[in-house]
Figure 1 (cartoon, rainbow, N blue to C red):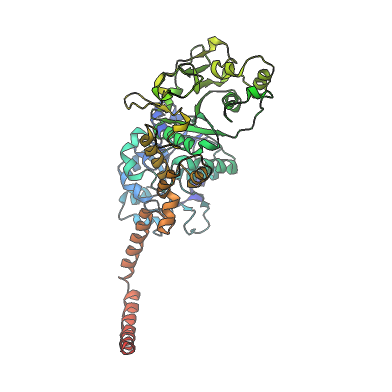
Figure 2 (cartoon, rainbow, N blue to C red; figure 1 turned 135 degrees about the vertical axis):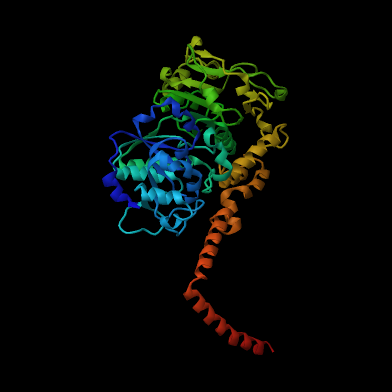
Length: 512
């Protein structure tokens, strides 16, 4: 086996950017890019699909699933000196697996097997320790930085909770087996590593930028909405809740925003650097369709796309200023063409250039020819859910919103999504409890908090999930079984058995 530092000296890769390939949804877009322009690194099972310079595997149990392709599809295989087993630490060295997994021996014989010290295991010699908290992408970016890479891109290293269609068959077995609620948690760590290593790192497919209008009373609602967006998205998404975002307010009380986030939608183009597309959604929604489908809609001449939702009987007895009119609750924005500045917009509102109604209903800050209500109504279905057509349900009747009131006709639909989001770790229990205490949501939401990963850990008295605990127990049992075959164990066991006899006799006497 080749130690990592020695490998650095002899590998001799071409001077070009590196591309990390993961199993996320954007891996299905690989045909859209010239992969030959990069040195390729495959994470885990990706080596089965693409020929790469380097294959990287942390969990040794992944090797059998890739054994048929490893030799011909990679120039080098990188693995920890003490590989993980089913996402948990193991004290078995890499070479101890050669008999069980002959492909490792073959790669070693060919001089293709490289080992490194992975954080969490005991280090071997003076080889550098590679940091990785929960995801193999972190280890690879660290290794590339030490190798001297300065430009790194990724494809299939996505957020959310799904794999690309190519790897759907693996989801039941390997998806988030490390216990993380989603793949999103890797991005903060990747950003830190890139900064520390001086790497220009970013994904080839930029995430879809989605902004949620929300306030303190809708925190739980926007968490569930974000979960529903990510679950159905075929592309990575960057979701920004616009919670208590500071901005200039009108002087005239008549122009006071109806919600704390009413004006926030006009801040989005500037927040995006006046580049690319962005989507605005109110927080009181659930998404069932692929948000990428909505964000890929053609603009044509307009720079703002909205909906004109159909009336609903649920509004009987409730006033709505936009009943049957344009809704700005769903807005697709072409940020390149929208030079909005919130200070200027509020200033014009104070100057009487337009009214609050004209601003929020007509979006009069763009010419009429540059706004269109062409987003299909199924992307803003008011108080309705038809599985055959609805892609977004909008809970517009505030008193009966399902996080507040069981009387909503779609209460069970929202509650099912809420429980699933809590179980996935997408809704922090402390936020739910704070919202209950403030009277923002119904107290019955507390019942589902026992499903939250943090609460499950507390209930079991361990920081590991049940599967991880079982794996550790199995590893210990295997270790004990191997020890029982040694002479030192047999001698020690014999001595203990002899000592037990007088102790047992003494206990019988005392018991009398």
